[in-house]
Image (tube, rainbow, N blue to C red; front, side, top):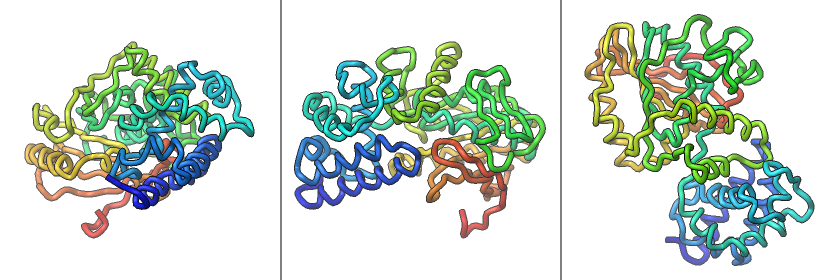
Length: 362
């Protein structure tokens, strides 16, 4: 655990980093709140009491977002009307008193927030589903007309319903055109291939702490991790939750590697691919779990053939944007590795630009 000055360095750094990210990603409310929290932390205030010693890796564990999610949950629940009055997600608007009201809320809801900062962030960002839609559109280029889709770190599993969402790139359309969750051409800098998408015949996920959106308290928790001044994100999430209530996704409570090894995930016939997918998950896996997942992937790859490919697809951080990479096994244990494109952390703006990676790039 951090103590004394080390704690101020580590946690304060995480607060300042998150402040910059929130400002860059369009949440001025959270940028202001984080400035107040970081100053309070250095003073040894309630922020210090709540965050000191909670995590040895506060940036990695997204400690500031845990605290902000707890505050947003309080606002969404309506138990603190002053705080709710500052959040657009609850019909309010930030005022010059925002910083003072946030710090007062820390003191008044210390017990609730102490529990919040000890629970993992669960974003289940629906905007990232444009990556899954684009990969499904790309799969026929490697000979897969159908696919089995397995998502690790699936949270509530909302994005397992991606075939029920819709996206139009201006060049091609993907998914269900009648869907209430839809993405327009402004989400794409460049389009994935035109044509037919692979049909997902099997959609399953796992998460060590899955969220069940059929429970109101769990829905509130999921909504709390969306930034309160980003109304479009909240609206998409609520619509995706409605779809999940009608078409419940299958999410098993399990760690990634052991889960993938627990059943036969291989393609079942020619023209079918198995896709193992994750988005902004790798950093949260322990080294042992990463190695376990890789071993499970290699075992799965050993069953691949040229007409039954196995694909490891992922959207993971790469600086200011995330990159979209795939390993493709077709019977040879040395995979073909591609970067399919880059995308913003919340979905926009996807730049589809496939290129083969050399071993030194992968």
